[in-house]
Image 1 (spheres, rainbow, N blue to C red):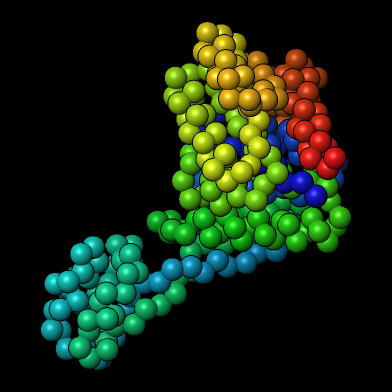
Image 2 (cartoon, helix red, strand yellow; image 1 turned 60 degrees about the vertical axis):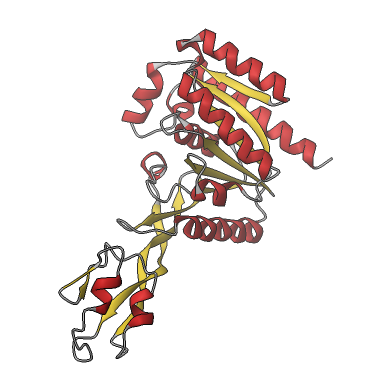
Length: 289
């Protein structure tokens, strides 16, 4: 079993569209959407939820009105200004527990938070494990780890060959939780100055965690000078370019139909994405030798 995570240093590079295409092309796999803050892979895969679970994480303070003497100490010391009129605003509360520690009459207690939900779903392409973090909730890295672990259990039980993960953008905690322990990271970039800058950041992240990076240049023909800059950077760093994908309105048409482009059209873009998946499969096969 090999795990491929698709990342991008910035949002909007097309990684979810590419993962949806991999869902069509890969034969034996389980799919993961680890962008729990703004999941959107389900829009293309149209899953049927089979299992729904609550995600509990973090704490929020609660003041017992019967015990409270209204001494004002908690309001005075709360640096997040989450306590007004001896009532805790759960949105502003950071769960630090300081008010709990300083209350002289033990009127403050810390309650666990129901921070979101995670799901196991069936799609026409295979099983999808995904999640939805609640509004203003944190600990998304913990939720990412949870859905990845569930996907690994499903893959082991079903003797599946691949876990394909649609990772979050950026290089923060959710990206780290998506990346660690993977066999290969496909880094989707685009030929813009911000795309080049963020590619370099996510490459550094991959190397820090010892995960092999491979690059895909999406919409490579919109600025061929910047495409050459990305190619030169990859060559100088010893990073394989798994594929380059044209800018084509056929992808937008496929998205409007709710379909991965490889299923919607037998176009040049479809061929390029098929070659990209073949390059990934070849690299993963090398790791078994």
